[in-house]
Length: 456
Image 1 (cartoon, rainbow, N blue to C red):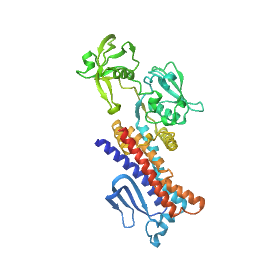
Image 2: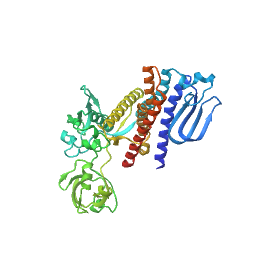
Image 3: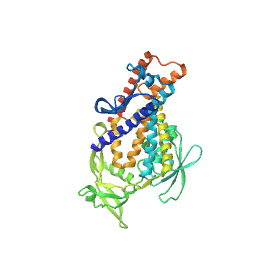
Image 4: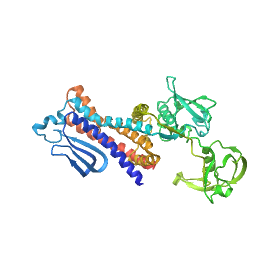
């Protein structure tokens, strides 16, 4: 819990400081006087100022945002000798640059963070597939347990390498959002038997693109060999005579292609509230042995969603094969820029689809989910945390560019109006738009918080 809280605070701190520093740096470059640079809102808990005319740097009690307060006649009277340093007196292009600098700073940070993650090196599951769900799009396409996905084809017919499972999931998400089929090149585990497979992602609806997308397609986790790991003393597996290292060949006469199928067979071994005895055939030191295994029954879920499942108190399957994805200086920066652009475009498309009802609002996440993922990524290592930080930085940059009052994008919208008409938005309309913007933001925050609670 402490790791999660600290990771969340570091994440917010880094992203807020970079965002506000973008505003601050460009404001100073344009000759605008910056009165306060605040990380957080509410009561000031720490303050530093170099002199009476210098910027006041503060740390506030509520670390869920920040702000840069500039000299502005619309907020307080300005002394005549300082009018040239007031934000509202600067040319339109300078005001636009100052407002846009915050989101652009987040996007620039994302490029560096994605690059740094690839410089450090990411240990990711190899793009070897587990058993597809029966009658799913992946199953109907002909994918099988142990298929190694080597490349994907773009709409222009060019093939691109798949380095790890993360690459595959990214391309599947992109194609599903566009409702286009995805052609992939697969081989067996030894790299033989190359064949082309088309995933019919055009059959999906845009609303299906959420956290359950892979299961809807029929793809679970990465391939894991059906070999038992640790066997708990006194559990059903131990009582049956099973040992760590046993390779499961058949359960009740049916073949076991991978650990995913083995787990499903164990979970399903319940009849009338009691564990159903299964006949297992395993390979141990070159010999085939037969065992009678009776899983114990546990309850999964609660309320109407509760159901009985089987457990054998052993780890069913080896860890998936991993591959280290590491890039050089230039390639890492190129990958960082590419991934930042792709993630930005994906975020905009997803928000647009949610707005018109073509994508599920379940994709909105709030602070609880961010905190949970921050803690998980820290536990996985530096490269994963950098990648997570980059993803949140992209989201913050893109969301701040939305044309909503209270956000940077709303101010940019005002400046576009001023540039087209030659006059600023009236105070009356500013007030109306401000109230509307607050209502929209509160609604989005409520949905995001509801999704957080539902997920956790």
